[in-house]
Amino acid sequence: MESNFAVQTAFGIDNLPQVRQIRQEVFMEEQGFQNEFDATDETALHLLVLAGEEPAATGRAFSQDGGKVWHIGRVCVRKAFRGRELGRLVMEGLEKAVAGEGGEKVVLSAQVQARGFYEKLGYTAHGPEYLDEHCPHVEMEKRL
Image 1 (spheres, rainbow, N blue to C red):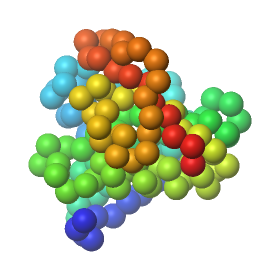
Image 2: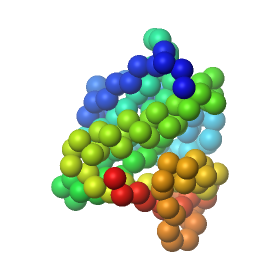
Image 3: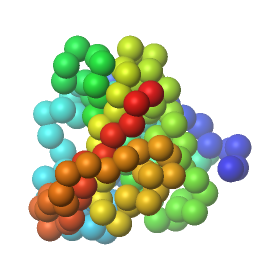
Image 4: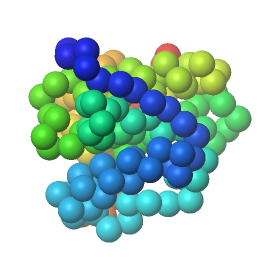
């Protein structure tokens, strides 16, 4: 993996405004999702990967049970930066941050087309496929 990437994390999307730009571009413009931003963004842990000054990739994590189980989501890489293992960098950074917050397990809702990516990172799928907006997803989890 290239080493000219910087990683930043912060709680609350307003503390890393480039996250909005990446998610708008990838999920809304490229993939056609409508309901991209939600109240969880205000308190979630966001991770941003920068290539120099250019925002390249992002993801978020949040806990709903006081810290043992965390949900990772909104993981995406801008088209110009794909193929450089930035998705792996996002996931590993979020997993490390979650473990640092006392998290023991991560769950996520993966787009079915990305299932293999998450399986390579140690996630296992469970339950049936379902639609989130127009896109098939599957629940996955991993113990940290």
